[in-house]
Image (cartoon, rainbow, N blue to C red; front, side):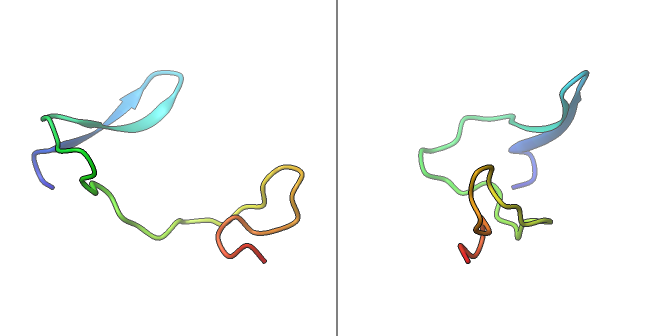
Length: 51
C-alpha cells in the first residue's frame, strides 16, 4: 500500500493514518494483530476472544 497511506502526528491527539488517494469501497488498507487485548467497560469478557 505504499503511496496510498500516510502516517502523521496530530498535536493533542497523537498518531494517525490518512489516505493520500481515493480508494475503492471495501478495500482492506491495514490488517494486523492487536498489540493488546482489553476488557470493555461493564463487561467481563475479552474483546478479542469473548471469553
